Image (cartoon, rainbow, N blue to C red; front, side, top):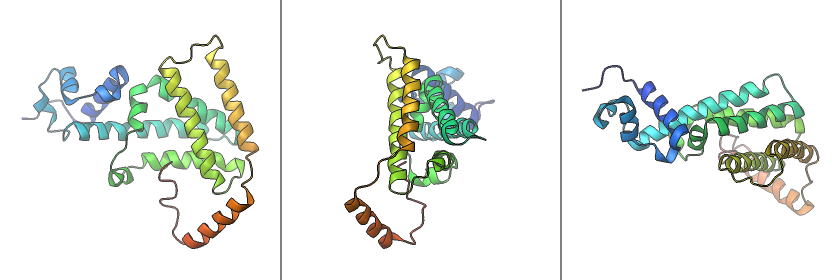
Length: 216
């Protein structure tokens, strides 16, 4: 029998909060059930097991992350948008470590496509980058650099890995400025690679953009 007062939304929200407290990898159905003071069986009317629970947390977190990023860049452009985006990214990762870890989870592509959260994040990133006037393949290269830098810095900071005397906030500010400088002065592709890219684009023309940034 389903426990009165429990809903899928409450269960998933509780699991997300638990992830922030103990780590996404440590979230289990039993741990969430204990938080509600019920047996594991009481949750199975709302989630289909551990994988389903974690997937739902990942989708919830992705939506919250997308909201935070889009709000941070709204009405901004160029360097201001980059600053808003990068600070919102880092703040979310540090304030909600379990949720952030959940956004890195690989989930079924079909499930991901049914959610607008991941598409909104990608749209926000590429919309923000438009001011730097980069074209493919430089645009994808730049997005990968940006994500790698933000993820790496936030992950290391959350783990307490920055032990040098240099103030972390000062290093962060320099990192954001460096990203802006690099994006404004993106290196040109070697001629041989430009020709190869042009050939590839001719061969794939008409395929559309639905899967172009699937790994981003």
